[in-house]
Image (cartoon, rainbow over all chains, first blue to last red; front, side):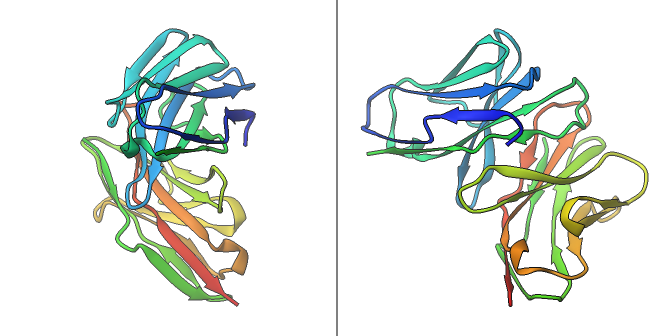
Length: 114
Length: 113
């Protein structure tokens, strides 16, 4: 999976608790993305980063925050998890500033919010 | 705004038969188009992309895709399907002035022996 790891791989939590998912890359790529995958919706972008401490919102960012203090790590935080955030979360990376570079995906984190 | 439509939730074919997975897109400018495949409990794997030039793009595992600007389509094809091609396939589009990808809902391909 192109030098991308995600942790944890599985998590079960309760409504109202904070959750942080971690994406770690060894490729030194500039761009990092967080998606969620839900049946019938494909992948939807939550947040993305174009450099250390540079982040922006995607199409489904409500209820999520991100941080990137190092090139290799991109954290996704659910401040107060809700059942609607039960999903599979994927991190992706891409290298150069050209928009035609494909993204490479991590193995995913399956999150269940009870 | 950009979007992708994959009109078929499922495609079923017999091994050895041709496989086609349909994709249509909408972007305000010129598109970059991508196909990804996802095997069970795995992340997405890149198959191929269209940037410019020849409308027929060849990718991994014997797959190819044809870009049709007038029909705004980018259908994925394989001349002879294998059982191991059974997976979930995603089409994605990006406007040339944007870094964000938009994905279709996905098409589940089942190839029967």
